[in-house]
Amino acid sequence: MPIFEYRCKQCEHVTAFLEKAGARGRRVCESCGSSATEKALSTFAPQAGRSGSTRCQTCPTSPSCPTARGRG
Image (cartoon, rainbow, N blue to C red; front, side):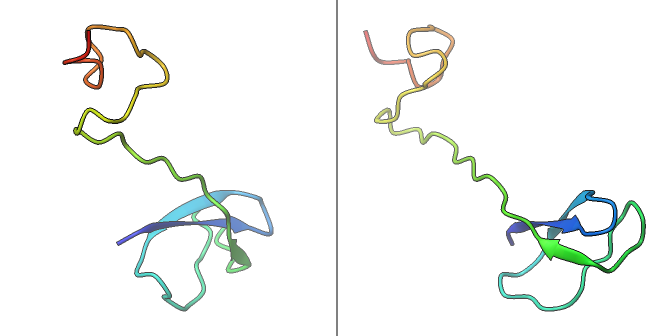
């Protein structure tokens, strides 16, 4: 199940909920209890695969980097 983030219109707190895609219903802010929430755009962070075809952008030459192994 994906994680969706909701922003409270009252206090601006962002709360994450694990829910089915397309689920309906109001979410309640865990900070102030308001039901005036809206779905927020969240960032997507894919993880690099183990195929060796992806390059680590932060440490492409580090020997401890799992994606750098096998390259030389």
